[in-house]
Image (tube, rainbow, N blue to C red; front, side, top):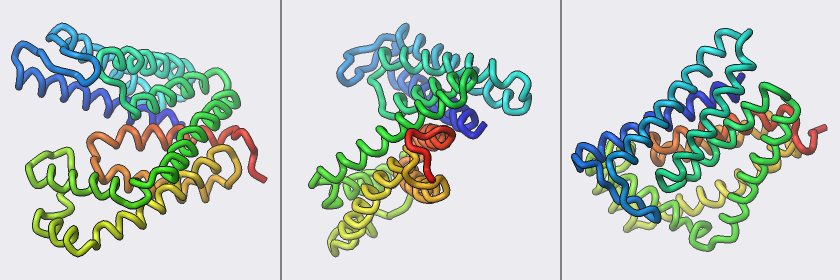
Length: 262
């Protein structure tokens, strides 16, 4: 039930963001032409198709919400909605440059669809997927001098602060331009980002171990929830769907982990 709710939030929010992106392009370019990194130019017909698929994902997310209130239809709806959302995101990856969040949501959709048929198989698949997600992310961060120095996180914080100051509503107004300049000059922000970077790498490794069953669920979620909330604060609009999908995948991973704790 938790995983299905997380999928509804992740899939529905992602669909709304895609729809908003398409509307923004049409306002800026009436003919609908837009350049997509690594994919080239898109015309109005292609963007309309992308919006149609997003509506399909939004309807599937709505069906998931309704299924949580009508338990008798939950199994069938979870399977159908999971397959629909996974198909939408697989198609959207060809219409638009693939995003890490989309991969995570699609994985959760497949697992939720499988949960309607076998909860143990779904839990095992979720455990493997979540373990790979967090352990690989943690190891890559540990191996990156730029990340462990705090400069990658510093760049993200500074970028978000500047975007918010410029009026971009996708970012929170956490620092004013003058305050940001002062913290950068003193080196305070870099030191804080360095500590946060080390803590993030350690947290991801711990959550990865927990998702495979090597740590008890309360400890795993006690680390994962604050960590993801921290991620989301960097850009709530873009990262909310990733946060919901990751926590949903983690919730299912505890059903039947690869290595059962205890």
